[in-house]
Image (cartoon, rainbow, N blue to C red; front, side, top):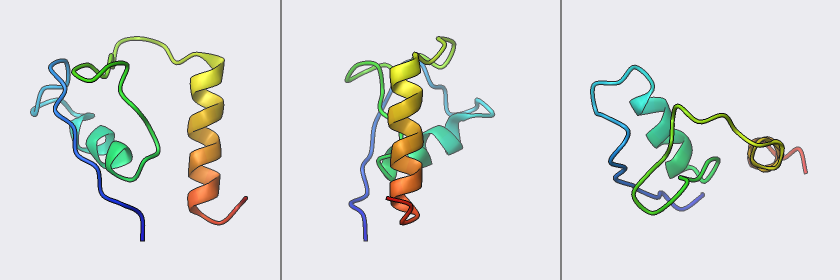
Length: 64
């Protein structure tokens, strides 16, 4: 079973509609923040960040 990670980002408010899925995706190791204290939810993903995220999703389901 994967290690559960936690994060506290200053730019993801608890009341945001995306807060729970973001924290859950981070806890499973699918996404990372842009720094130790920020997630940057209003910033577009780069092609590399998207590729890394897609790889992690597929790997977590045994696709790789």
